[in-house]
Length: 111
Image (tube, rainbow, N blue to C red; front, top):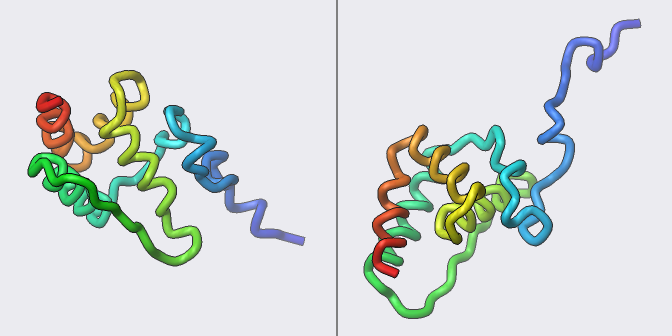
């Protein structure tokens, strides 16, 4: 009997969900992350708010179950977080997708 598993192989990174608390500061959850147009839009919005120096505020990311909200949060955390391999991985992903790493770099230079 032929089963689907004979023809489909799931990459290990998709075998578990992202967890913001557990996976923060790790590069592994970013490996293979696909930077979508929506993710680029979110990074632009967060960068614009940071560059404007807006005080306070909060962000809410909503969407269906398993739509990538936690993975996007990890990308944002790494992109705007402290220097290190996690931030380097995030900026590499953003740069490859759209050249956005310069946006997050400008904000960090203001610090």
